[in-house]
Image (cartoon, rainbow, N blue to C red):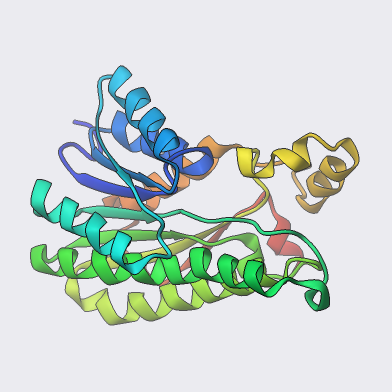
Length: 252
């Protein structure tokens, strides 16, 4: 039997990169996927790819920083499935690197809104559905920059540090109710969001050097970690922030 046979799995940011890879991985393990992204074209491509492989998926276009859009997403899940077994809160944006004193307020606000507020809004909808069935798993996608700092990443690092804190609080509030909530903290992963790194030989070398393993991570490596954290094999883990970063944060 496949690991997530007939379970309902929500994945935000499913239109590309880590979200796409994670959606495909869960679908291959038998889950019915609710694929959400701010890009209608992106989420439709994800659903089409899942269905082409024989899986099941429902598309939902939503900006996770918009409370009304998030509420509509959970209304869809409630109406169509009546439950939610696993939720992966992966929607995020990077922002423009630069010193804190040069940050543009509107962009700073947008990074915080998507990367932090979006996780809160999603958990606000996910937890009540899981409480009704007495079980569930949530995995929030933070970052290595949720554990350590890197110059010129102010808004992003602030949001991801906050995601780690929010994850721990939510885990404490639900640990005795059959719900596990964890965060993973990836290093730099070879995804479309990081294409500007891959396309710049000097920058790529710098980013690779941050990881003791000497390379960027691969999306499937993150997806496999998420599957493990969502499965009963990790049943004694909640409130954790787990680095998946090629050793980056081990340097402190």
